[in-house]
Length: 150
Image (cartoon, rainbow, N blue to C red):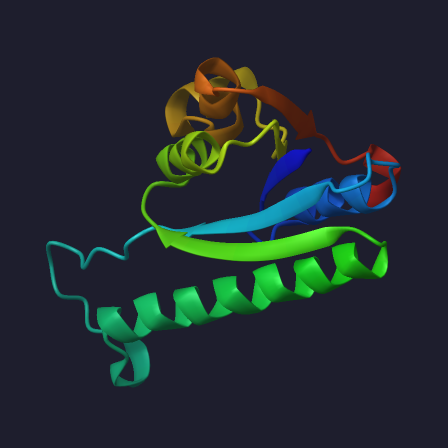
């Protein structure tokens, strides 16, 4: 089985990783831990960044953090006797996840839900919703339990 686990470092995506780690999976299952790094666009007006940090430096920091995150989660999954690999790709998270699922041949996509209200989903959009609506395979959206969130 090929499981694509999309993570962004939020408590919701960490919960999704924990769900995968604590379930029995068929022998030979591989989990690809994926993080998408969305481009940092400079504002139309130059507000000046504190301490002289450039947008390129911010982008590099996001990419570095994504690599660390995917490696950390991969180690957790391997500690649970799962085979894991990592991928960090640039682009819109929803598009990156869907493209990777298609290209890699995922059997299941697992994502965390941020639990937005209907109005927030309409205004902000929802990566999880986009994946559910357009995925080439099964999708599991993991929600954090309220007791864990507190």
